Image (cartoon, rainbow, N blue to C red; front, side):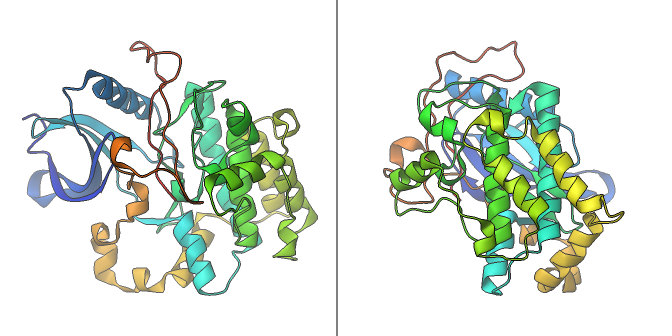
Length: 355
């Protein structure tokens, strides 16, 4: 089959309604090998699933940016269509936060703002290049490589700005109010979600907690926002202003776009003439995850450390139990409009990975 000699599947590391996820290798001449992630479609005979899978491939194909997880190829392996994606050797923000909790540490303010500023660059790029709204900005979908590069991943439920759906879309704890009240989103919804992530980085606490999905969504809509200073008194006024503006309930009162939010972050970081860089983040990660850097074999064979968070997705909707907890993810119902095969970004039906 085409591509069968070029790509090798190693092991399955996740599955979901659309397909299965594998660690893999890109194999070349003279022993050349590059780690990759392979996403394989469950059932190519299902025309609707096939159309959605192709739409995902086309959506990813137009994205090429330092701060975004990349797609390399769309190929047939062993008779099955597969997305060939970048293997990211590093950690999700969820793992980063968990490590701080384990060590009873609060992430540093400057590095937190730095990470968010890089996500802003990614969001602005995808919006300007393809009018894409991510709709799933959360700690599980932001990664940091061993070298300190921040990457936004998983555009599985991305859509055009201004899209309205038939049901809720995304992770409840990171949704913007308009996504809950009106099932509508645009680029300012991503700004709100990123504000929630920044709050969590600064305080080490999730902003919208609850014992079940309805309780979480109620808190999102109510808009009662504690100050992250309650957990971290070292947050300066300039950073607090960024959090507060990003989290405005009215989209018109937020940053106009991710570029404006990123500019505010970078003013905080660099107006004094110096500030954190990728190298700064790398050095911090070395202290946070020393075992991963101290083992030469691990550095040479990153497949051993591939985080499942990148690609793990829930089982098909028909076999999944009803939502019941704060980490629940929602199934997106079929939107009003069928995907347009000629357009770069069809609207689709997805299951969203759990945090």
